[in-house]
Length: 193
Image (cartoon, rainbow, N blue to C red; front, side, top):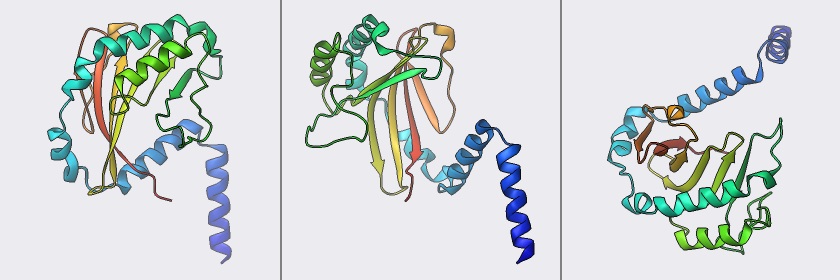
């Protein structure tokens, strides 16, 4: 037992003093990936998962949403410690997402934003993220695959500079829709409690 206590003490000292938070984050990501079934198991499923033509056809509406949000950018109160703002729209008002409500948006853009999100529809959007550098992410949908206990994440990204767009690799796939809009799909393991 003394050896176990000594090992745990050394482990705690090592992780408290030597590893920065970024390394711990990468370590947790690695453990999550290792906890997934073999990635080859779902690689063919990801390759078969098509970019939704409805999402692509809705690009002008997503771009209008981006412009509305950018017009109200100064009202988001981003700071040195808060680099982005994420908004989840709750289509079902009887459902609550902890820490989020439909009234989290700045009042100046709230009516236009909600009308447009409702027009796009709950199967094609559930929120967005705006970053300090004005990068805009549309949270299109998450689809659960019970076979692998994975979620398929679909997102649209608008980048203020085309050179910020990076070609992705498995387990992410992407397609360029314009010189600034990129559509990405990836698999993400669900957290087990």
